Length: 364
Image (cartoon, rainbow, N blue to C red; front, side):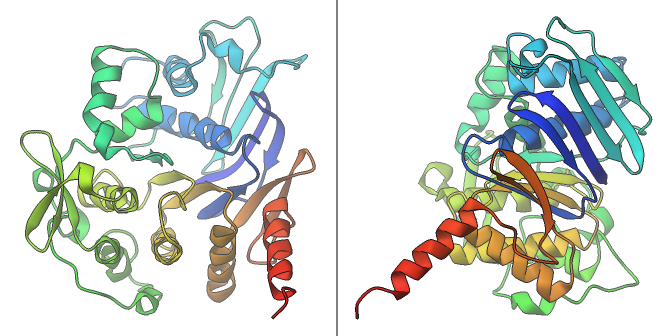
């Protein structure tokens, strides 16, 4: 898992040092402060470790990293990622399983990155779930990047589109995972916070039940048929993906990737705006499921500007005595806190409290 991250002069992130990370980690702040940028910076580093020495890939870690930075941030040259007013180089260091992955480059860099890597290659897969809906654009993303090779959809979209190409019926049941096509009945969410200490990860009751919970939330499953088209299946009937609500698609993607074996208990999942296109009840249930998966070693990084997300994660942290580190942007600086200890000070929370006070002071 990612233990800590330090960076300097990385685009809008002039200086950041986030220590003591946990299974669930939250970045909050107003629009434009660099939340999504940070998630993508973390993602490129993790994906470099996952592509390095995988199969017959002959590329060095530095070559893979340069390519990931180029296609994820889609700058004309990677040196454009160095903060405009910076007088020194961009510096990034990730501590992964207590081993360092660090690199640096300056404003005159083309593709030569000074990389020092002590971390071992990862056989597992991580994924980035963007705020925008993906399934309706699946074939467009693949054509745009794999055939046309043009900017537009960055690597977070391409990697996700490629991961979705593997159908659940084409993979074995991993550690007792049932296939994605199975039905699901309404379930009691509270009954799943009882992890079996003798068994964790895929195949455990809690981990496997998370997929049933996801499917019960959306009332069905998504399917990728032989004609490479997506459908939503409910009560034995298939519906075109274009007629399906965005919130359903978002939750269904996570269920699908757990079902096709792309994600396992060692994966890292990055979610940009988990609240996007979801009503409050669905957000609450989704975060409950994330807490279940986090108990079984999946690590989560989420970026949000929703008071509802912050409050729900605070309740999870308090009820389950779970460490949930928070990185909060306030007064032009990044502040660290932990939802296990307190709600952080942040303009998002301040504004929510202000509105509440205005409401209770309204004349009867």
